[in-house]
Amino acid sequence: MVKYILIVIVAIIAIGVFISWTNKTKKSATEKTQLTEKTADQNPYMEMRKMAFSAKADQIGLEDIAEDKVYGMITEMAMNPGSASVISFLTGDTSLYLSSGGGFIGAGQHEEVREMVTQKVDGFQKYLSKAKKIDEPKLPEEGKVNFNFLTKNGLYSVTENMADLESGKSELSSLFQEVNEIITQIRLKSDG
Image (cartoon, rainbow, N blue to C red; front, side, top):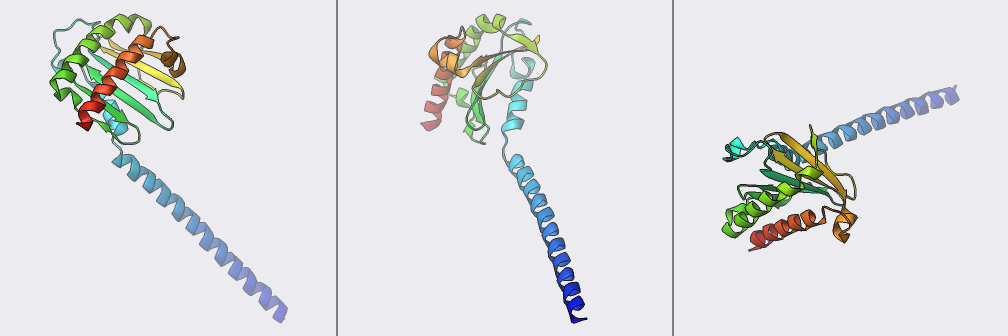
């Protein structure tokens, strides 16, 4: 009889431990979800990226440009881990957003940067024919760079391998180099 009582007590303790462990696991999963949501709320990258892609020519003071004129370029590079978005507009406004939550905003407030960016974005028109019209921008896959052209007619995009761009093997290597010059200016003005 004592043997059966001990078995029942051990079984009850085992069930209690199991229930306690299950509740702890559920609580841990809930806490992880809340932490992930909180971290996502604190990192403005996706919201800022969305705002950049939704900027219309009229909203940034470029009402009178042609329908097929490139008024903005959003270059997105896969970084390990995450991604970086270089935002440049014909107005000279430019910023760099990092998916890690960092970045440099408003470098176009510096006159020399604004002038350089305006010239570069105006020159990006020659690359538009390499891109295809898309409905939704996608983040770049690993090892890729997405060049996204904003026009009144819509969004156009072309993707290239980072290695080909860096080595000069891509017909868009010069575009990549120009975007890197913008990044350099953003960083120089943000450090100074």
